[in-house]
Image 1 (cartoon, helix red, strand yellow):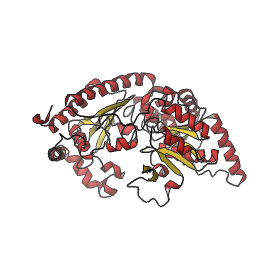
Image 2 (cartoon, helix red, strand yellow):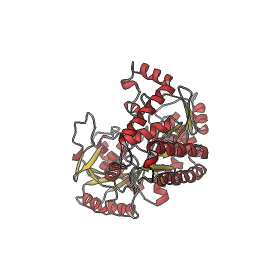
Image 3 (tube, helix red, strand yellow):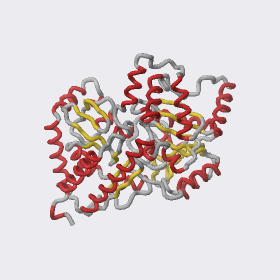
Image 4 (cartoon, one colour):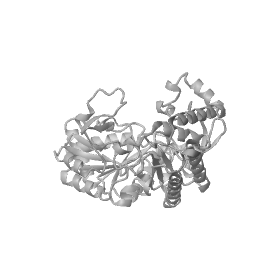
Length: 461
């Protein structure tokens, strides 16, 4: 249990009060939600859009910078930011201008333009790897790099960490249970045994990692530098050094997925901490909110990719790698990526975001400590998360054990009703270049008020 002083009956009553307040304040969203059930499965364009703690989905009218306005005209400070998709703010002016500029010049031709040359060279400069490819999403990128890793190494197994997040790639939807790799609970429609070619170990567990690599059948370790979707889990000191050593000694490639940890620095966690990946993946915010992802490879991996293609071609498979989609690297997206890298995803942006995120983290710790709660707060660059455990978790299992769905939904809805949005499904907050100290103050004030409503006067220390 999160805290024995939290009265569960009181928690439910408070949540019910917040549900009624939401329904009263959002008649237009409620009306749209009812209408949406004609034509949309579950009343939303993607089923998980109905999984927020609100009585019905909150419909958005427009979003700019660090704020958005809903269909009923209420304004919000947005600390979710599309769960990193809008990490540099909604409708960045440079990206918006680039979209308008490209609108009359064509969207997709399956041929490259000048933007592709500029973007490729900028990715080399920024992230260090010499060769890059483009997909529509990080899911597509991860699916592709897993295929490339197997093709290059001739090995069948991909290793991931328990509780990892790599998009909706089927094979990564696995967990560790009693030492065995199993399908993630809730996985729908999966008929193949994912455990046949996947292996799962705990994050920060170096002995388990060494044992999992020992058979010599692991094509690649696919990892986030810090775990981010099961609650934030930071690496132990020296963990990445040992991970890199072990993968090299075992002949396995290292794939680093920075789709969330790009919050760390302009060159990601990898450049900031010298991770030296063989393959680097980045999606979500790379095009300023327009669907796009990239992956970069080392010279050695690129050489292996060429050999693999030649081998496939000689077997009659030229042009049929099974990777890529028609709209990948379209002209519209490439122009947006160029604008985002040049003018939005800058050193100056991070210089604003990271110190303000540090202030947010420190203030949240003060609020929590003042109320005697055994919770922790973790920061990774512009990314902040509070978790219902006294010490930051070291593994996905520990992070999952700190979940408290009832408490989380109350806190999120309470803050939403007071004009502050945080990420659903866990307690993550992002600071973007447009976030102001007043936005942080509003978040902290609503969070503190929620705790005070939850903890009756006689229960406070």
